[in-house]
Length: 212
Image 1 (tube, helix red, strand yellow):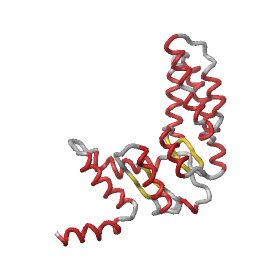
Image 2 (image 1 turned 90 degrees about the vertical axis):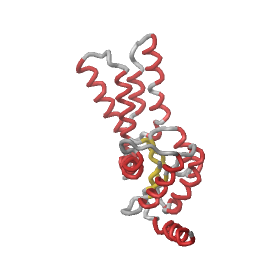
Image 3 (image 1 turned 60 degrees about the vertical axis):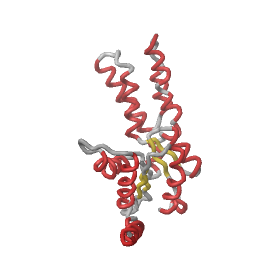
Image 4 (image 1 turned 90 degrees about the horizontal axis):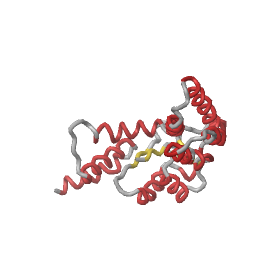
């Protein structure tokens, strides 16, 4: 699911599909341009770090600034800290607190260096060798202090809220069972309504009902 938010009230648009990610690019780009993406001075793509998101952003809006959602980055940092659970008591918490400060400052190099100083062996060593890759691969998308200085959003809380309000509250209620066509239909209607575009489909539905 995608939320397009040009930054002013009542301007959000929602898109959702069960199709593969590669087929999401065309409607995503069309929806963004319909909402004025082509005239935005600083276009931003916020994502959780998934490769397909950055692939679509690079393909359709290569000029956009790509930012990893800070909440997801913090989750990954907590996961990294759990690999170091062997550190006793306060030392473990102090390590995590220091790393969180570095994350907020966008100092990803310091996080990676600190994680790789421990002489581990076996399975733990393998995990600790690969876990920092998330930060290394997304370092240029985690310059949070710089992004904040430009007045850019670094969190996708409104996107998560949209997923819950537009999709979850209708499709994930207790005891519900959906077919893909049925879920697609109701989700499309809810996205249109939440995007303020209901009037564009209501006349069509009304005419079809009248013709029947």
